Image (cartoon, rainbow, N blue to C red; front, side, top):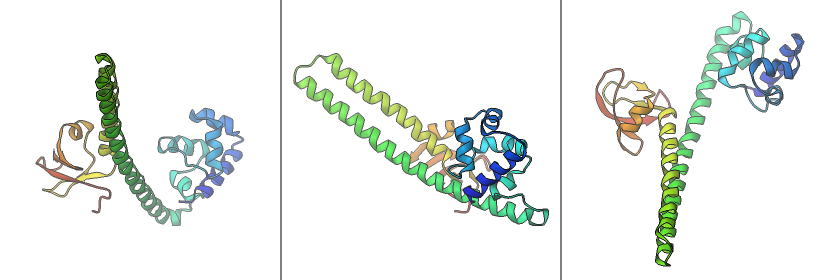
Length: 207
């Protein structure tokens, strides 16, 4: 997927429809700076905006991702290529998210431990109890928020693979939150076969 080509196509089709960047941005509910970034190839439109953008520009999503208006004889080939590229991009993004999950967990645990140690030290030095309680409370609050963020990442990044039927799926947040786990392997009910098993986190549906 060539972001620069996609950006040039957006700019070309926008100008053909006599729209300024500000006008296109207003119709999509974004800033003209966002449109400028698309057109210069610095970023791609969010997936949630692509259908509306394509409708305004009179092109298909396949055209947008290809960076050119695709002829009918090459349509299927381009579609397959774009889908494969999108899958690769998702897998890369999921890997980054899972690394972020680990980093968030480690930093939040260190912060909680630090608050507990500071609270203990201050208590030893004669500080009032409420100060120690406040410090530990701050540490616990950020730990709970971080844990929620990590669970959300755990849910949406990649997939879980059923040990029984081999089905690969994205579970609900509730399922991930309530499941027993060992690392990223969780004991959950498979939506396909209905059986519970230890289900492993995988990045690709082909794993």
